[in-house]
Image 1: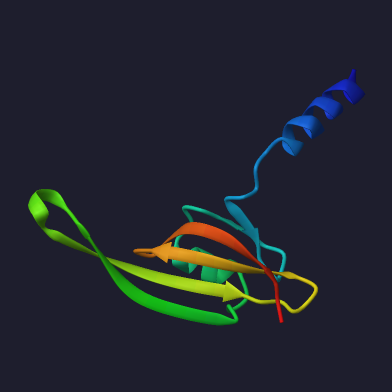
Image 2: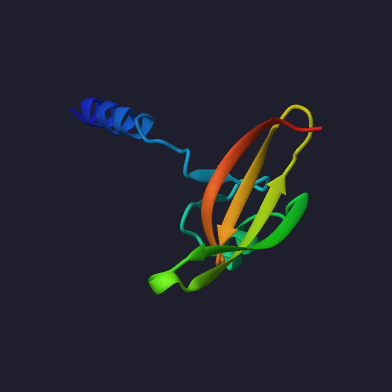
Length: 101
């Protein structure tokens, strides 16, 4: 009975999508929805940071400013490069860009 339960647990875990999470170079895991300070504490510093401000139309045509910061993790030619995008201090998107340099 225990082996059946273990098999069911393993199959359910295998079905999860980890596209919304990132394993930091030091082994910690961060996920979409984590705050910038949480990611900073869990991960090593990124290889590169880029910051900008975007605007979008809000209520009654008011302009809403969004602070966007992108952190790039490039761990070398045998590892994938990851781009973490924060919007107003919250991890919004995780992209895989291919192998590093």
